[in-house]
Image (cartoon, rainbow over all chains, first blue to last red; front, top):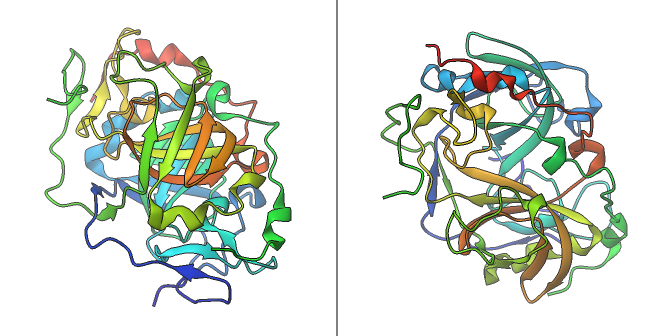
Length: 168
Length: 168
């Protein structure tokens, strides 16, 4: 059973479409020190652990020039997450919240995103700092991080919304 | 023919796997003022245009609480992009570059990411500022942007790497 399929009060699931609209290739694996969700840090800024992106041989030429970027955006696939939850009940907060207002792995398309510090690159492996996922998580993409387009230090998230009751 | 399938000198394509490893659901569409790639801004910071995320009815409950976030991360699917290019030749630079060092839509999994300013939300539609894609682009995910985990104003990208010749 998926780790995220546990249902809590205030959660709302929907029937998903019978067919997918597009397909993904796993381009490699993320290697981390964590074997299950309980061990994982809450996010990648809460750990100094060095993790590695192991890129499959066919895709390794795509790593060229990556050493020019100090930071990377890593997309990975939360393959153990439920995909049918539109409202969720975070453990740490009262009330349910809309899935798109959360960074929970449970979402229609469980694509996780971390901004990581790029360390060294060799033999199809990129060492990074800033990941939070289980060892062996499928890797989807690596992108250079541009402060000009990706950094918003002024962004704010008001968590007061967590206390609203779920409404239809 | 895909707009991105044009091959330029220095580009390198690979045979893709016969089967996908995972499937995506399109959760809605991105509405923008741009009908083709030539009209699109280079990135979402180069335009003041207001765009809309039209979320399909089934997924609308997942928008609850989104008004708490000033900025969002939007993931969308570049459905016209080539997926087999591991090295590309940017129009504006000499030499080829690895796909993972570029934000080009052409990549094994053409998931694009923009950080947007959240405007108003009503009836399953989120108005935002900061998108750069063609009208009708499939929507994959919406996430709250957290400055604490997502912002790296100090990140740098050294484009000198673009002048390196492609090497195997």
